[in-house]
Image (cartoon, rainbow, N blue to C red):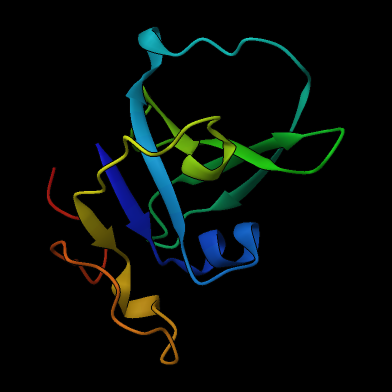
Length: 116
């Protein structure tokens, strides 16, 4: 799964209007190298936590873990060497979308988390 997330935490973490992420089953995820630091917050839904990991050398956001979906790692699209293949299928947490954000998504949007 791939989507654009407009929650305030993603806005803070990216310094932008949204984050584009790819959900990968945890067993298929293989961090190749490097050290990361983690920052954990209460999820915007209030129903768990989100841990965001970033590079300790450059500060780039890399991936996140949501306690509500413990078997998935969310990789930040901007951290991929080649994200040209990525096709986001939804925009989520659009209730937090910035009012100055032009409509750029041609995908379904959800005010909060979509149904699983």
